[in-house]
Image 1 (cartoon, rainbow, N blue to C red):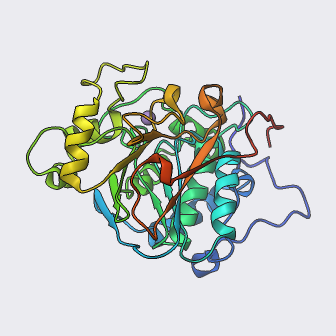
Image 2 (cartoon, rainbow, N blue to C red; image 1 turned 180 degrees about the vertical axis):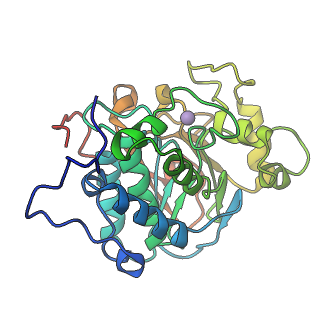
Length: 321
Ligand SMILES: [Mn+2]
């Protein structure tokens, strides 16, 4: 087991400057995942301070009004695979200022073996992007980010934080609090609904059902499986084509983008009105490591209007940093 950094005998290699991360200096100096993993305890605390000051707290239901311009780069579960996150984020960073980056949740836990403490690196890197581009980067919550409402296993994040920076429960709580600032669901006015797992099925006002952020909302939005999936977690019935038709009609959308069920990664369901994305090598055997480009400048009618791309981390293994 690795000793945590910042202990009295563990110093940085002489001559290696610490990454500078302070308040306004974070703009343009967002630490990369490898740098995050090398932070000393006090530097990690400073990064958390900066993120708490800069990461926007979104409502549970987020309306993204970007009609007429650009595209959204949408990625699925990354589960600590920060190398795949980087592959997607680098495309966002190279794109025009009208491009959005939207994560569908589950940034933590189940890290690939070559990404030790990857939950921490992945989450803090993505939060750094959300801090730097508050109107363009949106990190939806998955069931793993909603662990304080509905428990989830495995949950490796607390142990990873301890391994990196010592047994101080406050750091884990602060990191989770930052992830909880993400919405449970979002709607693009091109006609796309986004959530980690499912959508409200209780009848009544679907917006209110999301907005209250209750345990039921978390179960509906982050835990629900798709009936075409072979996975059934037993937490409520999976959603059917009829459920989806009803909800898309009610919400004025035509396509549901989600993550959560790895076995149907990249497989359009229900006549191309539902697509599941995963962006982690942990699950690449199911359908690769993929993300989607969603046009924002014209109506989206279904999966046929998206582009799905595989990223270059697929099929590769790396030395652990
Ligand atoms: Mn999930």
